[in-house]
Structures are given as structure tokens and as C-alpha cells.
Image 1 (tube, rainbow, N blue to C red):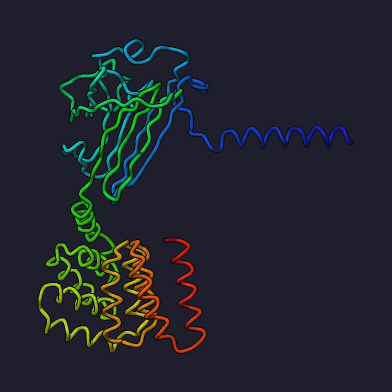
Image 2: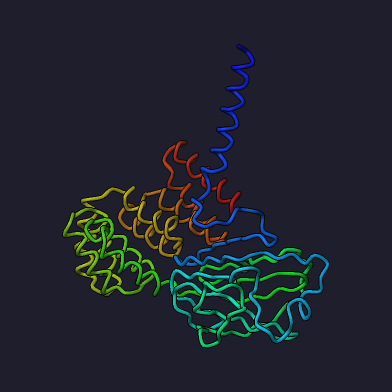
Length: 357
């Protein structure tokens, strides 16, 4: 009996193991079996602005071979990896070393030389390596300067020197680095995406239209569109968030009298905490500390005894690395504090500020 139970247990374990091997794999659609590749597939992604960049490639090893000028000859088109074409996908239009490239999928090829390399972005991204490369399918070519680096056994692509709207993509293998720069026009790209999104569900809510208008106001761009979107938001539901936002937009457009009417209405619809929330939103969600400070200063106009507004101004200056201004704002907040609880609240922000900034 025990032997039978042991056998059944063994069968269940083996069955579970077999199932676990298959549950994470795709259905086989050809007559090949799976086996480890010599050059492993890799994929990396990074987002600049709202534009996602994805590179898919295979990673050959050096294996004590002479690479550039020998295994990878100078003056000949190389697949910039192994096996299938190395591919790169841009979710939106980008600028590569100063030249514009449309969104889409591209095959990457390179022509190495001692002093200059040519990086090629081919419209054909499905071929095997560079064996069938056709120059007529080029979408873009850029020249780059190779850099000496420490030894890299397995070819790799990395994102380096990351900025808000710019990043370097670097191929590194053996003792060389091959960099090229990707930039995006964040505002132009974001507005285009917003306009597309406002043809879908966000169009039919006060929130979606208000967020679109807020983005424009925070970046002082397309205020005519922002006014149209905030009016649509108000038409769905009139509330503090969109009334106040319209007041801010009109103020930026120089329509001060109309702006004051809406700000006064917002004061009736919202509380101090709601005015401060808009500033928090600008700082945390939109990474716009200058506009956040403007919003907190606005709140102080209407709530002049607000220790929270001063405290949040200090926090925003800390976010920007402006320590002297942060200290002044925090000290002003301590003066406005009416009790121990409020003082402790400010001190907790000060401690966090000193720790993080």
C-alpha cells in the first residue's frame, strides 16, 4: 500500500513539474525543439518623456577572439549583435544625433571603422542579421565616434546619461563603446498623445479634459487648446478643480478680470487643502516645482495664515536643491504654526528635506 502511495506521489510530482515547464511557454508552431542559443537574446526598454524605446538583440561573447577589425571587419555592414537583426522600436518620433526619425520599428546595422562608425536604422527589421541588408531600405544613417572602454565579454546595449528628454544608447563590447543620442520633443509629443487620447474615453469626463488643460498650463503651452479642454471639463461637471484651473489659464492669457471671477468661485467651491492639493499635484505627479511654488503662493493669497503652504514651498525649494530658500520657507512656516502638532508637522518635513535633499 505504501509503495503504491509513493508511486502515485512520484507521478503527481513529475506531472506538476512537467506542467510548470510549459505553463510559461508559448505553443509550438513549428517542428523545431528548444535548446540554449550560444548568443542569448536580450531586451531593454527606457522611457524619455512619454516615449518608450525598446531594443531587442542577441549577445555574442568575445571568447578570446580579436573582435573589431578581424571578426567584425572594418568597412563592412555588421548586424550590431548576433543572430536576427538587432531591432529598436520608438513609440513616438525621435531625434537621433540631431536628425529626426519617425516612430516605428527599425533594424540596427553598423559599419565600423577605426575612427568613425556609421549607425544605420533600416526600415527592414525582420531580416536575419545583415546578410540581406539593402541600403535602399535605410531610414537614417548617423556617424558616431567609438570610445575605448573596459573589457565587456558579452555584447550589451545600455541607456546612459539619462536626462528628462534625452538619453544615450551605448553598444559596448570587447574594449569599445559606440554611443548615439536619442532626444524627444516632450511637449510636442505629449500634446499629440493627449489629442489622440481625447478622442477616446478621457474626452467624456471632467477629469480627462481637466488633466489635459493642466498639462498645458504647467508647461505654458497651447493655452488656446487648454481653454477649450477646460470648458469641456466644466460642461460635464462644474467643480473646484476645473473652475480654479480655468481661472489660472485665463490669468496666463492676461484676462485678469475674468480670472478673478473664477478664482472667487473656486474659493466658494474648495478649501485650503484643495488649493494646496493642486500644488502637490504639480510637484509630485508632474515634476513641475516652479509651478508648484506658484500654486502654493497663490494659496497664501487666499489663506495667508497657512503654515502648510509655507511648508510645502520649502519642500518644493528642497526638491529643486535651493536650500537657502527652502530654509527661509520652513522658518516662515514655523512662525505660522499655532500649536505643537503643527510645529511637529513642519519639523517632519524639515527632517525629510534634510535627509533627501
